[in-house]
Image 1 (cartoon, rainbow, N blue to C red):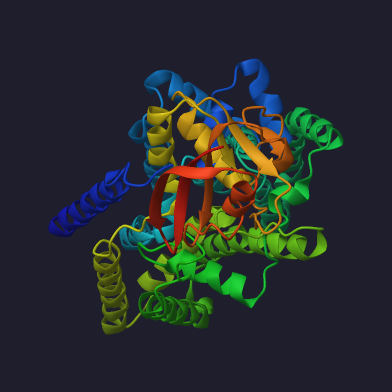
Image 2 (image 1 turned 45 degrees about the horizontal axis):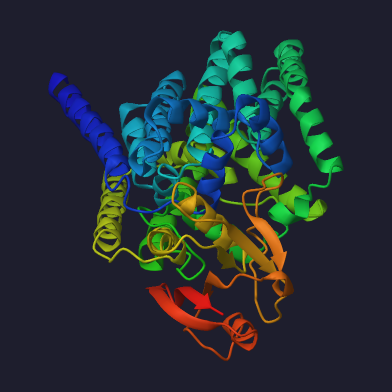
Length: 503
């Protein structure tokens, strides 16, 4: 028995070490992308202007940006330091996860399997290095679940639960689904506590009123929600399948629309094993103790309420709110449910086979993911091109997409770039409307094509190749400009182009 305990401790220590290492490895291997730039841009504002700037964006509360502002104040804006914040929050999530599992009296085997599933999950790995609020959302949602479990089982930790839930809703609007899960669990299973849980909801809601007012003022001043999330698809078969695969996919996560949604030869077998284990568990449902059944019902509630709510609202509201990164709040309870099902398999050979196959497929996914070459994404090319432009000539850079303009402005804000402009009024330029310059920002100026009067300028755009017969280069050549310098980087199926023109 003592020897088995040492084995469990060793396995636990190895899992924790691997969890930390895999999030710390390649910390600064990838560049910052559009949404991360917005995070840093927001955090660079003064305290007086940060809240109004974030409110104009409408779709996220301010807590993460406040935390990031403190973080930048401590260590600056190096890529590695910025990435350390979400990585640290992801690692900190282990604390409430373990406490939650122990509060539910889960066996060591369940704890190890659950930790394994979350350690290797590709989506969680991706968001653990993204300078956005999703690691914080995951961490606080787990703290909320743990504290609620304490309140549900022992009647303790009510005030800490209220505090964490307030922090949670100020991190992401989907935090409300966790709060509503708390309320629903009490109303369904422990109605004797209904007054206190409704008091928790009322206090949480009252604390959120100032932000509701800020958002309302931002919306009435012209901010348009459709510009933020109008591109999001309503959850159909493809979106739901993608989400399910993301929940169980080891190591891999889709980084761009050019990538496959999943490594099916890995994800489908693991999904099949998980589904069979869960079906076997519920087939033996009546043999489980009342205590265990209630805990599983809690897990199912923490999974089902956010998923059903997001699905229904995505079809009822003018715009969809469905997204894997928002639903990160259900990843942990799903993993606990799968781990519970694995551990409760009564046939030892089947249990060993399920766990072994999951480990083998995860190891295969690791080998595939970390042996493939690092893709070159177009947004990573703008920084070296901007630095090169600043070193050669202190002239303005004209862009033709908000996406490109924002990346170039960010890369050149500490360089000797004279000005970054966004050019409007050119036919034939296709722009991704999911990316737009932040509302309230004046760092990039808009200009119509016919207003360009510079004798010498840079233009930056994306295309298959440098083609003088296609816009925007064609328009400038017709206007009397000629190319005198050319910088091109090939990236992920397109060319990132920086040209100097002179009239």
